[in-house]
Image (cartoon, rainbow, N blue to C red):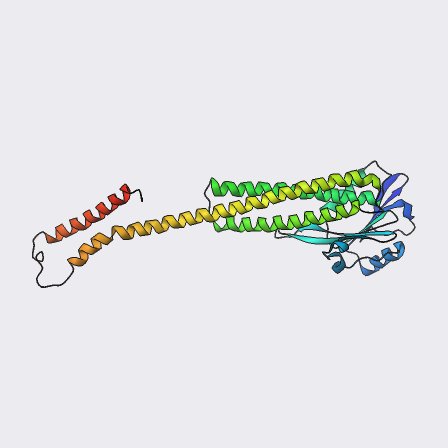
Length: 315
């Protein structure tokens, strides 16, 4: 599918096919989504461009994330996508700006694109170009990343309450912490990727100078997100250490109980062992109250041991 946003009679419109009768000065944005080979070829011929392959858009080198030719600007960036298992992964999106037209090429639906399209179509501004659409896309994505960080912070607060207040030490908690750590690292990688693209734009010879103030603000916002992301990751590490520490304490308590129980039964066991020996000549063997005295001795030895533990504050 090819979505085309264009200007007609001072009004922004959108169609889901490539209308070759449109002139370049009227087109703002061509968004290629789940396009067939024929649709991609039509766009390439219409604009005289070459769309990047998925492999090219996934390259991590700085020179592959943003570069310019004599009449084209190429940019590649990752956008976070949540799957059916509530797990995030990066989806590469390729951008080309030529003749002030933005061409975006992707293989997955993205909320940032839908929100940006609605915002542009609802806007009263008509004197905008593909450069403005490009920045609006990234601005929307930064806002969505901020929302994701806030949601992540709320989940971390819930986990903190479960651990420190409710003393809930189930294995599900450590799995949640690990899952959030993975999400935080992926989000950081995603945010830094946008920071690299925005920083490269500031060095561009083709990008409108009037956009530089907005770009600097976006870079500043990205920096704030990185700081917030780092804080979230440190907090998760702290919760992980706290969880493991509390688990160690619980295990030590259990071991302590078994140790005390073992020591308490040692004196009675010793007495029982002595009077359980089968020697022929034992003074107490035929004593009338020997059995009762042996039981009393065993009970007293256990109580004395318990009192000693109490006095030493080992219990």
